[in-house]
Length: 429
Image (cartoon, rainbow, N blue to C red; front, side, top):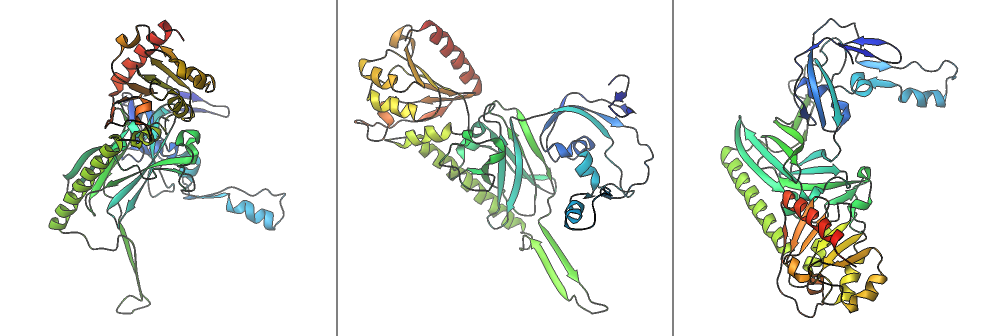
């Protein structure tokens, strides 16, 4: 684009735009004209936006019909074509902008130039009226981000005043069966990272606080960046209709859809908010119990914690394969990903198991056990500090002591990754 002109293969266009914005994030379902201009993207967009001059538009209908090929005679084939050549609210389907078309409304007065974001995004939100919960479906690129390390910022309001404002880490919510495929079936037998993004979603269920309130949410990356958002707004929760026949005194048909209950009173809203706080507290305690292990629990937790993030596993652990080396190597190989690890040494009992597991590489730390005290596990930007070595937390271990796995801040995980690579280059097999 040069001086407001855009050349295409078929024509030249002029853009009469003013007030260009800074670089901004346009989350899905925003309330501005810029959000409406990128409605069809179905992704968050990092963009610059400008205000378009309002100009008279030629007449248009809300229904767009493509002409049928004249050489196709009437019949079944022609009928099947017709079903796919009619577009109600054609600007949404053909232009990707949120505007029904026609003369009764104006298109969004914004011109947007941007790039789609594919780290993670809110694929959909469903309201469970019976349970007063929000079912949030999150999609992600498994090679770019760990969705379990992301978090949700949820806010609900009534008459412009906040009722609930909470920050929820996804890994702190009940695990259950959070990963489902496109048909809604559980994929626990296959780790989510092995499925394409169009074949799975991460289901996060959060208490909304109270019915008949305005709500919105933001999806945050592990490092705190906003990835996508739904603004706080009034949502349609109930649709009621009445049908009258001629001049009858009462309706012949009465119906409604959505939440069938009456609006809650202030006292009921307070009770629901208190119940939501209790649910969140219980969820955090349940997540803590998953991380605190006696024997075997930590094994399952680590499998689940890295299940949605692709990439090799890096481990820093002085005693990684010194206790039950064959079982430890077998566990690491069964994770189904490349593993590079640094320990104080490679004991003789681990050499044969390692030769049979080519995906698992273990080297000795340059300075032996004097280099390292902690036990660090890294996949992508996700980092955990694990309280004990593999041979000690496996089910059936000869001696099991209570331990836990602690999430590392994103910056700490990055620094540990850099340290791992320096030691790896200086180490010997």
